[in-house]
Image 1 (cartoon, helix red, strand yellow):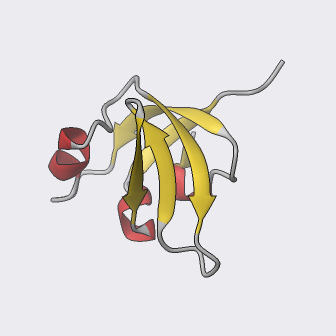
Image 2 (cartoon, rainbow, N blue to C red; image 1 turned 135 degrees about the vertical axis):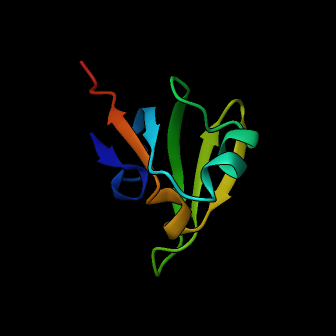
Length: 77
């Protein structure tokens, strides 16, 4: 497993768990729930924020928020 902030542009992953912080409830309300597939759409030039596709819509996350999400990358066959 890796942190969502480490996933490269164009890669997809499945959310597995969150680090326990005060931000995880906010992330779950925005559709970032365990078992959901996410795809990194864009990363700002300085690495913050990160634009992902989750639950059918685009969501921008700060790198510190993405650091709280552990994902398992989906490997292309």
